[in-house]
Picture 1: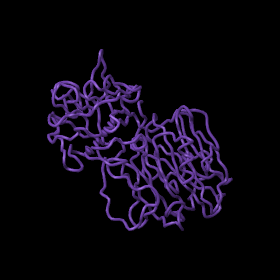
Picture 2: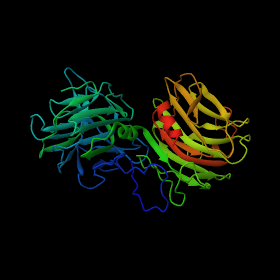
Picture 3: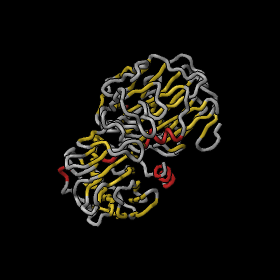
Picture 4: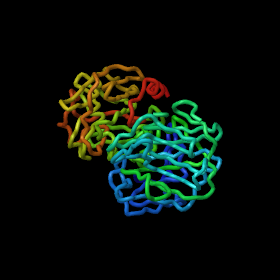
Length: 177
Length: 274
């Protein structure tokens, strides 16, 4: 989607404040995927691999979304490490799956992953596992209960509250769905 | 440790270095996603609340209608700015300022609404209305169309019939579903909410109170991004109207919002009593 910078305005808003890019509460990193994989804020630009395409419309009809095809092994990498060390975090995305993969015990469709090693708490990942919204720190995991639909725009979210030491997942804005 | 079905107790991430990927495992050989991704956001140091996540997921657009001198800024999460043509600043608003529609040229338009073009999507429209002249001449308040001139897969979704009653329309594969509300008072602010969900049908709330509802039905959407026009139907005056008498709405509109969910009575009670 396309974002417009907010210029100085001479009249004030009557009710709730205008929401900044990234939605309620804002964002630290934002990929609008409007023809490139750059971070809107310029700090965590991603690099596409195996030539993913940008398709229009995105979920709100403006700009573009990125198309990642498993059949072409398309993915992105981000060099600059985001700091989740002993911190709260929120990850959100709009997804339009062209397929949902599942198997016994599971198949993962990674949305975002940060990994140091295959040990507990050295993973931070948000994904679809067998089609469910899934967040994980490696063994401490949270799963939704609804398989995402194919060929529909859907909103997913994973949050971690450091003070409460608690993970949450959302589908279409509904907790635990 | 799983606390219940919706929360897991977990110590934090302890990563300080490593690799980051979108769309696959850090081996780059498995765990592939397959589809489109848009608006991927990460927020450090904050676990957004359930209310914030709900707004991010389902508040499509929100216009306070205060800033006529500037652009029609979206106060929602998507920065979908509208366009205001021929409207003037209302004589005050229900909250802050409002837009006054008082000529055949006046309209407000929002384009590229993907979810309103999808049959699976529930929706809600919210606004304050204050007609300034008799409502017995009809008038189109909210028009849905594929094209910006008001035509193409078009339906007048909210408006007045010849009795001055407010009408809300939806449509399924066989035609229009209409529900009829009360006569809307001139020179008074009235809060209007229309909600749709397949399992509940169409509902019309007046000043926070459920006034009329339809049987459940399947929304037969166009499958393409849609345009919403406030104030008139433009070239779509012959589009299906379900009793709405095509014409120009003459009056004020304030705090217009579109949601991609069926708002609840609790949501609407809060909105109608600011």
